[in-house]
Length: 246
Image (cartoon, rainbow, N blue to C red; front, side, top):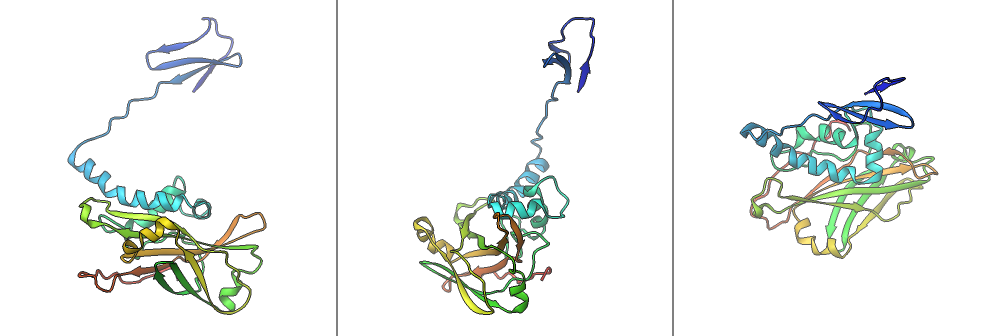
């Protein structure tokens, strides 16, 4: 962008070639016209875009949860924004068409997670927490602890590249005061109860987020991953549980 001062050719306005002239607050500016961007429709380019669609879908849902977006945005991962940070970190763990139990919804800098077990029923999901001194320390000074998650369920009958569906989940109010074991409940709403049969073949990604007095996220736990596989499923895919950040 250029600026013209004390011009002798009169006011600069409109487009000349690839230059655009405009006036703002008695100053004249010259801009380069935006170049036309051609999208390649070659077989390789189309295939590359199709590969990125599933991970972009996953990143979009994670990025839509305010607490997670804030934590990703403020993480040390090098990328343009929170969305691209989520994409960058999760892409290596995707299968060609969908996420796996190795994907995650929290940044690398997350801390120990006290969740030990997840149980799914028609009314919702119950998570068992085992709080020891180390786990309790991460919540000290927090004014609020929130549980947020994403559940990924599958509908491969459509034959589409991105046949998985994603729902955001939020737990009931969580109070962490003492050591010991207790349960956190994620109650299903009416729409989620209708999805229950689909949830029987799903992956749950869940994390605890502590917040300060202003409601700003401070810390998050390594997201708990749980694969729910219906007991009468004809084919059961096995995903090795791995968390290299634990």
